[in-house]
Length: 66
Length: 552
Image (cartoon, rainbow over all chains, first blue to last red; front, side):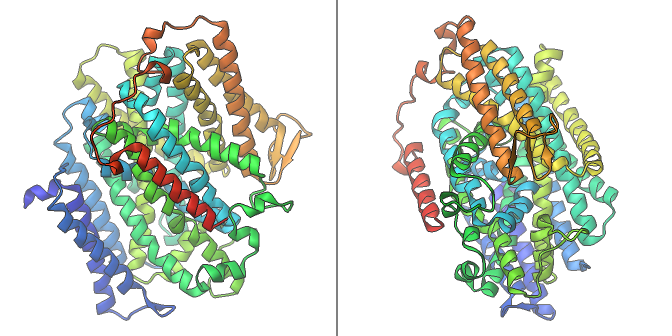
């Protein structure tokens, strides 16, 4: 697993997932800020978590290392 | 505006990751090539994303949103008329010479093709340009935080410079490139929700078209009629000035971006780097320009969002995107949006510093100061140059603080340097008769003509420093910049040809691999069609044509 730290795709995926989860946590824990009927943190957090997770999964099929 | 601890946490995590990347790649920094050229071993998806991210700095992210609000969808010509065709040209025609010659930098190609004085002229002008550009990024970052967050100017400068120095000193070019890829995702994912929210509020693209005058929502029509368009340029100025000279000059000769393709693993990957990059690049206007148009529409609709103004009451277009972020994003996404801006500023600075490193070490230090040093010595020089480059960037940021027009000045210098340089490269790569004397005097002449043109013409109160009665007054500084670029390119082109014909030519055997007509074409590899540069180019140009048609 530690070798994954030398995989850029994994690292970026980890970063985006972490940030996405924090933003989602902000949505679930605090009062939601709704703009134009859109729950901004829910939208942004979900997209980042999803993209990050896809990158993490993709990194296990990626042979390029740092 | 007050950030909460969650927003600060997101910013802090970003700082930890960028420094962490520097630490992780440090173990690979064993030679000067590793530090300054990433060992020419990076995979295609990384070089491709880094290629466009190197340009996705402060001027791009903040500037394009500002131009979107000021000039409308015509701003997209920087992408769909300028950058994309230039990137295709670079990939198909120029990369084989950059990569095939084994030059380590753009100036080094010039010494192989022409002579030492041409290389040195370009290396010095490029080094000065990158330091100023890096300093302006730093200055813009500090101003942004001072305005939005109330952070002290000095603290912002030192914090950003310290972090950039940390990760570029540890991991060199590789570290900068990896962080550029991270920055790309951060900018797209950090700003895209803002575009979605904005479009919802204005009623989609149809709502923008309904609210704004036609010349703001059409890319080509305003240049075809008699009415004055927002940019104040005609079709010829746009096509020749921006579409050809400035865009090809920047994307095909500026080492900052070309360096990202030159560090690919092999020739095929180097050629495909700008072509792969062209796909996301053609979609970037929807992330960086559209927010400007949305902001203008919201302003016209009389919503609670209004465009920011300067103390004298004029609209401050540069603050359009930051103000939209702070207006629409709640705690959480606000931290993401601001981190995206920080990332763009810091990456812009790191990109300039790493390009400066390579040019200083290879083209100035090794060429003129110590020719026979060991590799360890040049690795040490590269690292010291990183520190010196950051310190000079800090100094430049303070210079920028003293002169309120330094950003305009910098843009002008880009035209002075890159426009004639593209003429030099065109003749160098495609006309075997061009000589070192021709190239050198062409560059000097092109830059001089550009300065004279600026001194004799006026736009928005700028220029005309050579005369009290300007020869011509342009409607906008952008129109003036396009015309100056055309003058610089044409004069360099003509002077290079004339002087080349008057000076002895180089033997053809010395030009093999450097000039198109004397170089054997690479054999077609047995690869799928979608990996062949020509097919990729056709796909890129087709999609760009569609986008131009949609926003006609």
